[in-house]
Image (cartoon, rainbow, N blue to C red; front, side, top):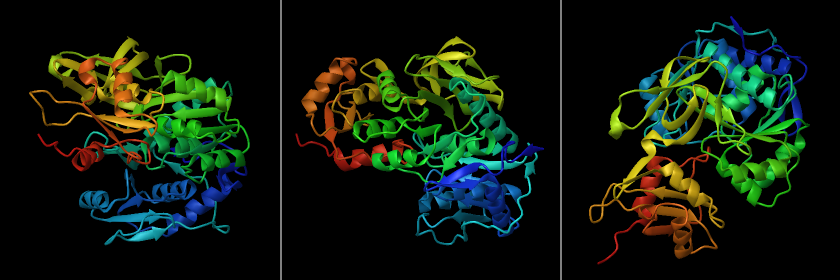
Length: 455
């Protein structure tokens, strides 16, 4: 049996709500009270926006033996897809959850339960605990069931690695502000699970605007950490908002440039750590991007190159060991130094071919967003071809740059065949809460803005 909370002082904060601490003991009381209200059967769709109430709902479902489903969004289409797979589906939500969901029983996750018992919770390692869904950035979201033992090993490995990088014996007392939804695998692992299994404490909110992020950090005592994405981090640093000292900045969901990593460490005063992983395998590796481009796997994880897939399919790699019990295929092309160290070259399903040349959307987007004056941008390669060639298109947020200036800057960075013929300026890109642009969203932008030109 494995504990729901790692050994800790139960009177110390496990969470913060607008600067007010919530103890681990109170958290266990809230979990116990919520568990009493849950149905005897079915699966729990956790829609809570508040990170503390999300954690209470997750714990209550575990205590009753239910699997928690973490959707990439709360759109009716997503919920309908899950309902077709889980007929006895019901939802847990707070007052911030979206409206408009019909035909679904919704239980409110409310405030403190001071009179409930606060017994320790232990769970079998094999208990099905969470169903994480991929973000849908390259297609339809796919479910991945996680057992409690896997989640515990994953969180323990991350906590040990981060403590070592911070030169601390543990993460006890570390206070976390996260801009990433707790339903996302990275947000779940690096905020909720780090609190439950790593000894840290989480801020209940999910600040989005730079001033709100800075204020949330300022309310918490040091040591403090910011869990975020490259998109949110770039927006925060470019905003001009004064930042308090941050001991640790975690970034994931897309590669971070060394320049942005160095600026982050200079502005925040702490260490920036990137996390590489995926929904299928969980967290796999870290790197300190301001100093190295090499990724280092978590202890016990080893990466192997899969033989014989051929040029069309490209090179593929798998990871196994530690919290990854079975060999799990990775979606990226790597350059292995050894089984525990690698460079990231791009996504395997991200490869694009133009006029006989090959690149990746990740590589192209990296160079686009490194242009001074580009606030946000993304390449799109349509399915349709012109004169036998698929011509790249760019959607960009760059108020001070014209299309010619952007194209000229790209010519200095990438091969000429990938320089876009069309550059579409937009006031903003419709990114997900994790900072990702899904394949569906890019297709929608293309339908809206790429009107065929008259001859």
